[in-house]
Amino acid sequence: MKSLVDWLAFLESLHPKGQGGIELGLERVARVKARLGQRQDCPVIIVGGTNGKGSTCAYLEAIYRAAGYRVGCYTSPHLLAYNERVRVDGMPAGDAELCAAFARVEAARQAAGGVALTYFEFGTLAAWEVFAAARAQAVILEVGLGGRLDAVNVYEPDAAVVTGIALDHTDWLGPDREAIGFEKAGIFRGGRPAVCADADPPGSLLAHAQAIGADLRLIGRDFGYARADDGWSYRDGHGVCHESLPIPALPGAHQFGNASAALAAIDALRDRLPVPEPAVRAGLRDVRLVGRFQRVRERPAVILDVAHNPQAVACLAAGLDAMGASGRTFAVVGMLADKDIVGALATLAGRIDVWLLAGLDVPRGAPAETLAAAVEGGQLGGRVERFAAPAEAFRRAAGLAAENDRIAVFGSFYTVAAVLREIGQARQD
Image (cartoon, rainbow, N blue to C red):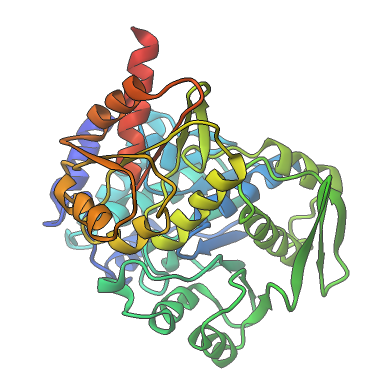
């Protein structure tokens, strides 16, 4: 009997590209899914988009749970433990449940001729096995990359959500928003609700939705929100109105769009999954998500954010501006080499007093020198220091920061995970 650690090592060995390997396409995963005999016995929502996917999944999960449904939620990547990717009723799946699911997928994979699934594909099939065993009443699946050829798209969504479209993963999805928009729109289905929370959706997304006959619902046209001093309101074109809603628990002005996208999907499925008003309010108040402008320490303030592209780092910058600070701002940054490092860091020009730039010891990790070249070449201001790893950079920042200063940790899930481990170790000591 393999342990979870053994299974994860096995998953990494299955495909030549390992854990971070990307090989888009549905044929392999569809073959194994068919062998598993997986059936969709409850409503499924697939959530894609460049940024905001995780937050929108978190709102959907929190609101449906508040309404009393047993919810399965699959997201990626994880920060500290693989179990975080597969949640039932808000709790990470246990090792035993995951191991049993992996065993079933492996048996089906062998029966399908030993097809070489990627780490993500194997995990996606296993997540569904966990949800089926738990008899989930609603399932939320977050796209890993793109949409059209992502493994979660092997399932049929009863509603699909695209949060926003920006430049990321251009080597895989195309060089511009039009190409990327077409890939994201691949999760839409004909005759089914297709929610888009991008205020300026690419023509390719609109054209694809029209071509397949999707029930397209656009923010600003078919649904939207209005902010007030003490709350906000949501309205759509289907007679749904929520007034005086509590401010979403996830910080940042962009969260109103993510929460609205979730509400639009909930409204679209109200006949199958009715949600009373108190559950909407409770979900907005109680939603939690690690690593999204998450404040984990005070005096000095420490903010963790997995932002890793220009649009996401711009939201981080807006959050820092709204937060204000009487002292200095330290940035602990580690990024993957295939990201738009120059564009992402440029959004923080003039806001950082000390850059603590770290290399990432993973296959796609960028060395600290690459980050330093972006800061210094872009004349972004602030002093620059280089480190071999994020934990080392964070220890230096914590040693330099006074109680009125703040430390922003961002650039990658790997960076935030490393600092979370460092903070946890410091607490144990």
